[in-house]
Image 1 (cartoon, rainbow, N blue to C red):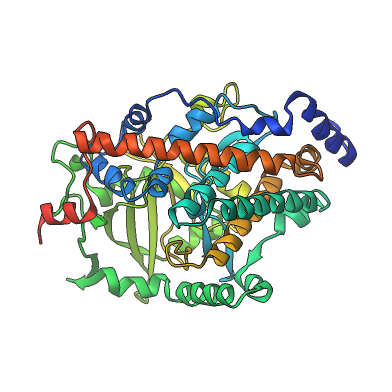
Image 2 (cartoon, rainbow, N blue to C red; image 1 turned 180 degrees about the horizontal axis):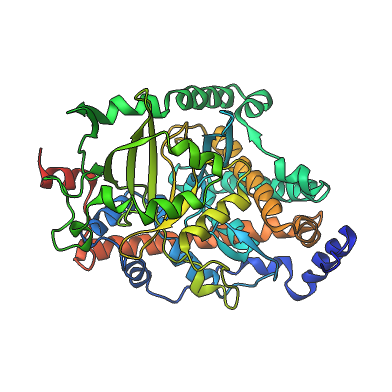
Length: 472
């Protein structure tokens, strides 16, 4: 085993990087001479074609919704920006709505990053830039004054640096076990509206369990539980209300048989033996397609309903995993995993402080890659449309703080990153300028996207359009 560099050697190595990549260089918004609509069309390849208009319909809601669904565009743009050379496992799609609350195996409610579909080894600063730009785009969407948006983003970025410096002082195990609970958030809340929002999320999380979900979306028919069709959000692919065309290869598969046999055995092999044994106590009741989020619309994502001997439910989500949007743009930095489900799972296990015990991966009958996790289990997210400016400010700072902890945990390079950042504000100032420039570009891209939808180059449909087309 090679001798590890000392703390001081790592910190000095980070400082030395400033000579090659000055912190002020990060104002560069990247490679912007491109067709955003063509990049979106490329990112839709391989999805269920009938659902792609729904993806675009959800992205049309606002520039922020567009930003959420267009990680591939920013990945393309970041490819030509200056890089520090510190490469670690990163989230890859680190925007404001990919953070939230969920339950640990011990039933403790924690706050963390919660989406790793684009996880991949890459420059740590790419996550920071995507998060910073999302804060700026969201600030504009919420009508926050430009000067106030600059100030709140600058403060959040300074918080990233402080947390990274604090992480550099921690031992490896101390950092690995570090997590943020909602009880801690509540105890440290400064403002009354912040405490009220945290209390609301805690209460909501307590109601978002497998048991509470069962009667809302399923009923017992002929001795087994069957989920109710509510397209395009949830539907049986062979049912009369399925929007998937009959000539799609998925329509030739028996879904329940598809998730048994080799698929199930491969998935179980990725779990701890204890949870393999636990799953043996459940029986499959039903399988349905579930359309989720914005960026994932059109991917082959499903939910499996299982119950135990006491008729208690377990919902497992099966999400298709395709190559990360970062993969074409990180140069020689390749993922060590050929299976994209494994890439997602390992990325989550590296960055997330408390993982889902049912998180695993497998290969479908048509050779597609998937990962599995619990659905819903006390998962909650802030509603940006309803919070006050002060709560939004605190939330942005919380996300930056959480990202720093995740980077330090996954990369083991906190001292090096902290050495690069230093005690000054040059990096934070540069990223604020980057975020403003990139938010301007997002608005231009959104307008080009909107015109492409209006002009017929792209076809966009809302959830309501889909539901009306399919009928009762």
